[in-house]
Amino acid sequence: MQIPSWHNTLAMVQVCNCCISWNAFYYVPEPGLFLGVQKPDMQQHYFVNWLQCRDLLIYRLSSADFDAPPIPNSAWHMLLGGSLDDLFQMPSSSVETLTKAARRRLDIQKLLGHCRQEIPMGSEYAVSDVTWRGQTYDPGFSLPDDVKRDV
Image (cartoon, rainbow, N blue to C red; front, side, top):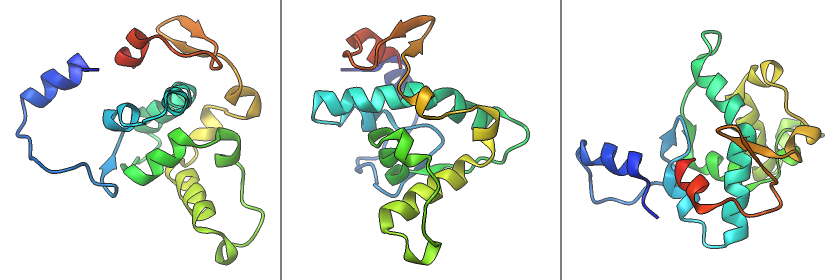
């Protein structure tokens, strides 16, 4: 599946023949994260999580109140592939005893900063329908291919 806007943009820049690094940093998820997911249900999960977090993540970049650093590719994987309810829960133990995954979730929460107070998210938000360009979709059903390309 080719994404026209990315295809046109990449045609205007120098392209290296290297792989996308797991440790690369991005302000928005690199399209390969969505397209590289092998299982259709997991790809659906990535798209739904992006659409549910999109307002928060765009606010993070566009608000004058926040200095938004790029997010590591590994954190994008966790954000898009994980449970939003689990991701946005505060850890129940001290930082010293957290698992690696719990530390990553905490890092994502720090990267998002105070944006979550401005754009509320919670379990009621995470299970809701997703909207793209005025059209509402049930997250339990596969998004149409044209929507995936557009996203």
